[in-house]
View 1 (spheres, rainbow, N blue to C red):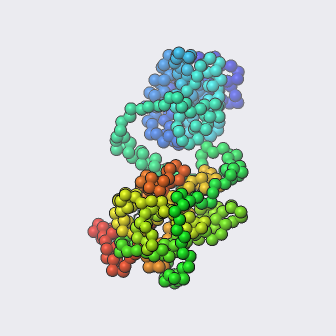
View 2 (tube, helix red, strand yellow; view 1 turned 45 degrees about the vertical axis):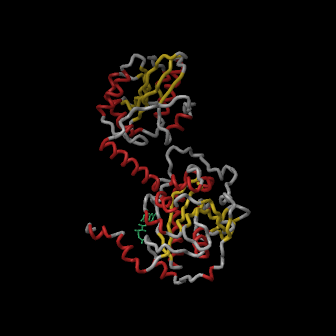
View 3 (cartoon, rainbow, N blue to C red; view 1 turned 30 degrees about the horizontal axis):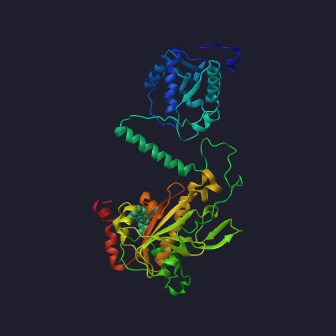
Amino acid sequence: MKNLTEDDIVGNYIIQPCSMEHVKRYGEIYAGAFSCEPWNDHWKAADAEIHVREILEMEQAYGLEYVMDGEVIGFILGSSMLFSYGRTFEINDLAVDPAFQGKGIGTTLLERMLEDLKAQGMAGIHMITATDGYLPEFYEKYGFRKVTEVMLMGLEEEDPGEDGHEDIIKKRIKAGRDFIMKFNDVEGVPEDYETDQYMKKPQPPLAKAPMTGQITDLPKDFSLLDIDNDFLGIINKRKSHRVYTDEHMSLTELSYLLWCTQGVKEVRGKAYATLRTVPSGGARHPFECYMAIRKVEGLEEGLYHYLPMNHQIEYLGNPEDMDAFISESLCEQTWTAKASVVFYYSCVFYRAEWRYGIWAHGPVLMDAGHVTENLYLASESIGLGGCAIASVEPGPANIAFGLDGVEECVFYAMPVGTVKEEDSKAEADFYAFVKEEGL
Ligand SMILES: Cc1cc2nc3c(=O)[nH]c(=O)nc-3n(C[C@H](O)[C@H](O)[C@H](O)COP(=O)(O)O)c2cc1C
């Protein structure tokens, strides 16, 4: 290991080679650091000590510790191996006591390690790190790149066991909470980050272009409909309907529902934004509306796409078995396949990301709520009924509507059908378990 020079002593801290004498402390630091974000592993300090000791004991190990006021508060450690092209160093661990994180200690250790390894003539330096979060960017600053020629393969236990499952579930719950709580406070994003709109990148289209061009104009004269205009009455009456009488709705009714949920009232500027019958963060309106139409007067059964700029629909085709498609795409909620129309909403992500970048995704979900709420109210106002559906299986829906599932993905749906008062008992049966289980 390299001898210390005066450069190693900066302020009241010292960077010096790791020593087996401090292995217990390394274990504590390691366990603390890797039990926090972004890893959230559950290390016991004793196990972490063994982990570090085993690396330190390697003949080709090299490590540096960061000592402040006489106490070790961080370390970096790895070992080298000889390959045909020269000796290559693998950084195994970089850990800083959580109480001292965010102060540049990890950065200092890494920079010093890289200097030392360069001086030692290493042919390469490798490391394994998380694919997500701030770490890839942290290492990229030092020239690390994702190696695409090789990949990490693992033979891991398939069943993580009860504790493992609990961990996975805890992590998912935490990620979900963070998404809601911190969607505008994303870790590791550089301070000077700007979204594509701010960088003057071209704006994506306000709505998707026709896909097949087999277009039907929708009637816009809603005076033909018997609309209940008692606003408060509609609000009070609104409820989820899961029992449908399996009859046709009229084309004007379908047109009215599409108008009330995604209709374009105005274009702001030359082509900056659409102003629609629902609000949307930044007027991005990142949704496309697709439909599985079973029973609409004058329309062939099939899959359709709404063209909001001209208030039209286009025919996309017909699945082999419409009812099976609807059930499969809505997680086997078979009652949905009695609706006259199932509305499927996709998100065209970049339409929102262009303006809001990393902050786009929370508002997308908020916007989706406005769309289906209007669909509930509009349906109710003309005597139809529907039920919002979060349990969407995007795979079959994306395939059916020809979406890639990456740039655009179905994520929300709502069957709407003809309903009658006498079915209220059948409706109530969906919640019979509440009484049965004494809830
Ligand atoms: C975002 C969202 C997702 C929903 N997903 C489903 C669903 O997958 N299946 C279902 O039967 N109901 C679903 N519902 C309907 C709710 O169960 C319903 O709104 C709730 O029970 C309250 O009843 P109400 O709408 O009649 O007031 C969903 C509602 C919303 C708003």
